[in-house]
Length: 302
Image 1: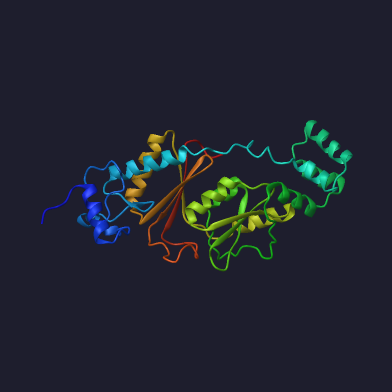
Image 2: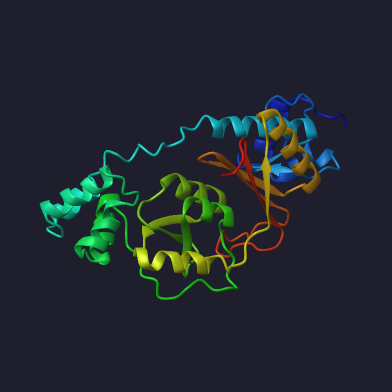
């Protein structure tokens, strides 16, 4: 029987045979759109790696796929710290609610101009008797997000859905996973980083709900989260995109993951490699074994 080498012809045969549904992995072709081999998965002894659902037939195609996906992530706009400036300043929210006076707010702003390095809300709590609960409530109004009640601290047996380094770098923690396993709740102290929340959604498959906790609770809960178990993580620092591509290609070719997902989180690239089959029912259980996280940067971690 002759071997069909035309990629377009192969796809048409599969679609006809399978009623238009996506063909199973062993009938798939290489996911690199510029691959010239036309090899079907079933005709190769190589069954991995798979990157974002697409099989790679060679190390060259793995590198090409990584180039494509890292370029995709690199072209996404990275939110700057100034992007939330359109929000009503927290001092005005507090003033509008009647929780601070004009004089107290003016004094706090004068202290900031004079060199006070903390946040205006902290100063008002420390020097004007503003209740912490009121400050958190005002922040939730400013960011249009919920306030989470911490009824229990994270268990040491729990497996974090997020790498430790990301939680430390962006100051948040995993509060809980819903009973149904569909929603992951994460908490920040005084703002919501939507880029972080979106990256977690894309990697884990959870729907992420981000909110705030009271400032006095945040530090202890964040520290408690560090006792959780984490997916094994590797850190890569590269001087250029070329060297990063070489390192990632080598890693993925060595590990041969059954799937890989890639997202950008501000200045980092986050890859999660599934070396064992992902849970077929979805992300109800955070993986502990058979999974590897890779955090990459083109500059030194700060």
